[in-house]
Length: 115
Length: 113
Image (cartoon, rainbow over all chains, first blue to last red; front, side, top):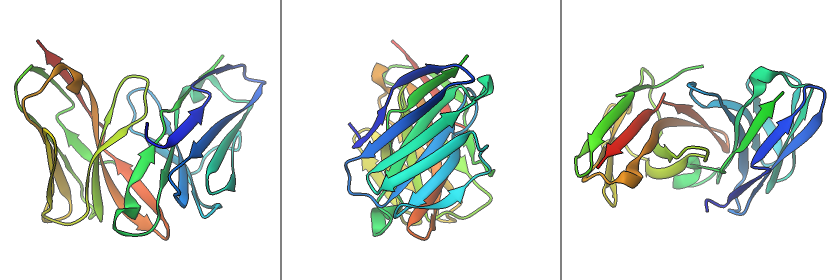
């Protein structure tokens, strides 16, 4: 148990569906992240939120839409995805301050399959 | 984006053997992290290194932050079957109050009895 909880753990969706991934962190952290992990590729940073404000968007297509309503919750809204978007989507958080503020903790991930 | 050079890509070892893997970068990082990922799960933090030259242990795991701040290694002593998984290094820079991780390509470890 890392203190970062993701739901659902598995999701299968059609290309015309709209779905959302949810992340909640119980660590009192100030920054939250979405990463994508595809087969045989390094983890790719998608979005970074710090103090509920988006500070980084790594050229992610608009069919992925993040939302951070407060410092404990992060969503990834999915719309008209493509089969190549099938991957493990990982949420993470970090304290943001202090010596260990760099340390990022991951959730267990949401497996997404687009059919 | 930038990647870290992590080696070896995969290892097949016998239970009880020691393991060593490393990461190198052309850039300097403020922090080095080592994660382990089991199939179908998210990466779990093993060791965090915050200072150049720092040597840190966590049970049978030992990691060091290179003095040039461009490399790090992870050693696992007396491997056991549950050590199986993919090990990732990550270098980190601060971006305001958030952090930017650059991941290595991973080392896949298989342990045979």
